[in-house]
Amino acid sequence: MIDEIIKLRRRGLSFRKIARELDTTVGKVQYQWTKLVQNKAKRSSEEPFQINSPNQGTDKKNDSIIEDKINLTRIADEKIKVDWKLSIYKENMVAQYFNRPISSWRKALRIYDVTGVIFDGGNAQSDHEVVLQEHHTEWIFKGLKSNRVYCIEMGMKLTENIFFPLLRSDALYSSETGFENISRPQEQIQKAAEWTESVSTYTYYETVSEGEG
Image (cartoon, rainbow, N blue to C red; front, top):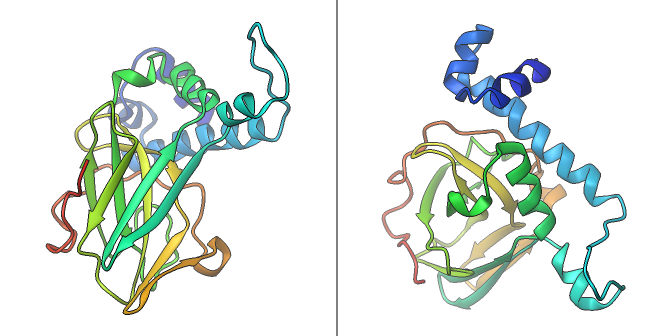
């Protein structure tokens, strides 16, 4: 199925048209495409990567270029800051698959309440989305409730209703005394998040603001 999806994407067909062409659902097409991109990224990250530049070497500056990072930091009660760094490799990979530079899409953050669920990208208790400006490299989420588990994804808006995740944070437990990081195995947060074709940006708790940029 994925081979047919790749061929049709290269012809410029949307996921909805591909689904009709293959007599399947849009969700299945989106899931297969997301899994393909993320598997490619995983395999490539395990292989040596060289950056062509006049000053090639193994210094720390070059190392930072190929690292993907997303960090959560508590800055006050019920408030966290998220900052991220997208590697040049991943930016190039996305541009190659979609035949468009990554800068042509709007970037966005999604914060999920994943309390009590095995999160797969589409089954959170609730979520809230913030569309970013190009210059944003960090964001502040306020009004988080205690005794809940949250995680955050950074990604792109392919359409108004389609979010493509690129980075996902570890889970964070918000207790009455502060925040605690939770390892991925304990929450079983899967790296291969499913697509969500239509996720309301208004379903998250009203106390969660759109942050500060």
